[in-house]
Amino acid sequence: MRVAVVGAGWSGCAAAVQATEQGHEVHLLESARQAGGRARGLLIEHRGQSLQLDNGQHILIGAYSHCLALMQMLGVDPKTHLLRSPLAVTFADGQGLALPAWPTWAPPTLAVALGVLRARGWSLHDKLSLLRCAGRWQAMNFACGDQDSVLDLCTDLPERVIDDLIAPLCVSALNTPAGMASGQVFLRVMKDALFASAGGADLLLPTCDLGRLLPEAAVHWLRQKRQTVRLGARVQALRAQGPRWQLTIGQGQNTENQVFDAVLLACPAAEAVRLVSPLPQADAWRQSAQALQHQAIATVYAWAPGARLARPMVALREGPQAPAQFAFDRSQLGGPEGLLAFVVSASTEERAGLQAGVQAQARAQLGIAHLDVVQTVIERRATFACTPGLDRPGQQILPNHHNLLACADYVRGPYPATLEGAVRHGQAAAQTLQ
Image 1 (tube, helix red, strand yellow):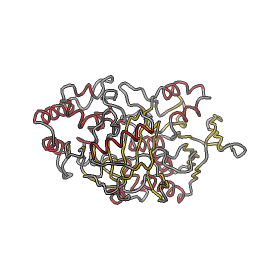
Image 2 (cartoon, rainbow, N blue to C red):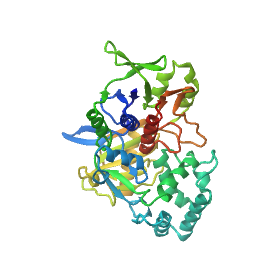
Image 3 (cartoon, rainbow, N blue to C red):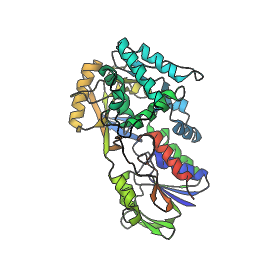
Image 4 (spheres, helix red, strand yellow):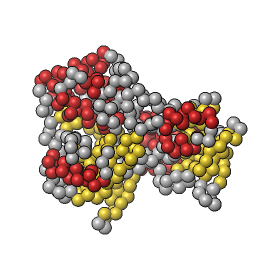
């Protein structure tokens, strides 16, 4: 089949590679000048120095099996491009939860129990409450009511445990505050990360820019396989042409029409809605996609000469005028000395407020007197709001047509908008081509 993949983010790259493996002729089309979508490298100039950053600080975890397998297939060794360590949600004062290193043959539940019992800053009552809560989740087979929020699952947990662990885990995984976040999706993430296999919750922090981690390797691999990759090529329109699909590609006088047997939409929801709007049978899918609410993620990059955090990733206490949930020491991840990244998930503030808040957090929580802000990156539509009972649009856009599919991270599935979810949806869409 002649297959067009619209969008070269992580989902589109995964779909294009999978379709190539199945023997199809693939055309990967991306409107931007580089691949990667919302997880790509970002080169900036700051005071005469070139800095290789990212459009947002991302992490992976050990449970991201499809991401890791795809990286290896593309020739990117996770062991050299990702810094792996047991899960730690610890603050600058050392308080919080840190799981121990754990052998692969041992039950992961024991690692969780040991980590909880060793947690610093919690009373014995706090720890036993969390263990009882986790045991109840297991007894429920990690399932709850569709309308339950994450906080609904934690009604008997002390406020300290919610603030120090549940809230940071929830907002980092679902990019939605715990009071608004889907309890069912949160439980699925907890099950796969903490209880399914040893090392599932391990932190995998990139030691290179996100472009090199997967998208650039995918583009190189596709071109080696003599597939077509077009960057800076926006799809203007999609039309049915019998059982096939015509795409209008390009801008102005440099447009062309090409016909494909199948189209995989790996672009953002708003762009997919624009393309399918002329198709009457797509109304139900379009309405579901349009109903998605989006959340922003902001990353504030800043210099702090001489600063070195206790870990590559340190949790921050969130509150009024304290927007960031985590700080990353980029010098421990292959970057220059003194470069920090502050991550604000579910961000609602504007740039000036974010920067002022991060400055205050650095002083109060990290003991850093002054930050020299390098760049503040705000991805305003970084993820969908993963709320209880959310009816996400399905993979199949038209009721009786299996070769026009959506495959970005917002498509219906058990996971929130993560890199792993994007890769899985891309691969799954390619596998269904008929």
